[in-house]
Picture (cartoon, one colour):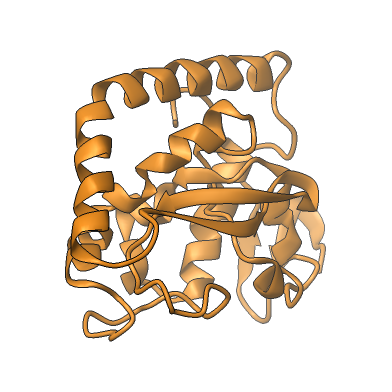
Length: 195
């Protein structure tokens, strides 16, 4: 609910609006250049690690090394996100992601990939394709976005990222409402310096 002096009330506590809704002129172009250069550099630097992970997954678990899944991108557009496969090949691809250490769907090597976030590195390809950014809110599966309230859909006004504020500051230990606060802070204060 909008209040005087730029305050917004969510339940009881007033929250101060920080930053801006829209990007500054040329900011999107600069961010895209940053993303392309960073993704190309990342693919070159991490190529030996990516190849090693690819063959290690194939050697330790039956099934493909790469995992493709529909995710929701900027303005609600659906795209195919790529990751290293960390779960058994027969795991339901549309199920909620594992949250605990002992999830039986996750392979032994997949646990290490998830703990180090190396499973996310193939998304550098999604960045090159323009579907993702290096930094931004993490993309969600369509069935999760379908349940968003209108205020949560504001996460879709920017490209999703390989990483973001809540991944760096709190990882998955934070409750979802705290994660959204970090996403909204990033959206309103986004800049190359923040990236």
